[in-house]
Amino acid sequence: MSWDCIRRVGKTTLIQKAIEVLQSSGLPVDGFYTQEVRQEGKRIGFDVVTLSGAQGPLSRVGSQPLPGKPECRVGQYVVNLDSFEQLALPVLRNAGSSCGPKHRVCIIDEIGKMELFSQPFIQAVRQMLSTPGIIVVGTIPVPKGKPLALVEEIRKRRDVKVFNVTRDNRNSLLPDIVAVVQSSRT
Image (cartoon, rainbow, N blue to C red; front, side, top):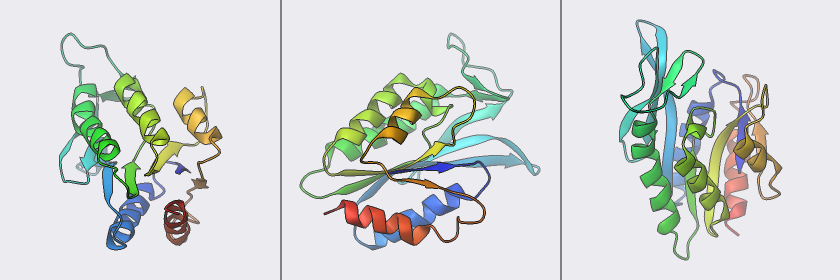
């Protein structure tokens, strides 16, 4: 399951609420979300936050890539691929390997341009989507500009339900998202 999102509509807040409800229903939930980093009221980047509480930079405005590393840039943001992979990949591998007979939920916020610089991440997402017993709750960007191959692949899957999150509907989507996850358990 995935849902489209437009930045700054409350997607991360919706993800966090979904995590709380799913965990309180007894479902094992793991994964990560991204959150804005602000300094003096200005957005200076994004961090990756795992559900176990680890946090590190995903990107920063105008920062330089690490020496010897290719520059991965989205607009004004330089992606810290090493930090992202060190946080996100173990979470995804753990969620996929500890499935067992019960269903598990894996939160992936987000599958977007910054994250897609990582080939191991792309492979891990594909693996998660094809692992029986794993219910993926993820965010993908709305289509604009050049299509992102993995995003389009996800959008076209028959086993994916896409919710379009807007400012108008963000507060009413939570029950629908939880219902889809709960029905995926059967």
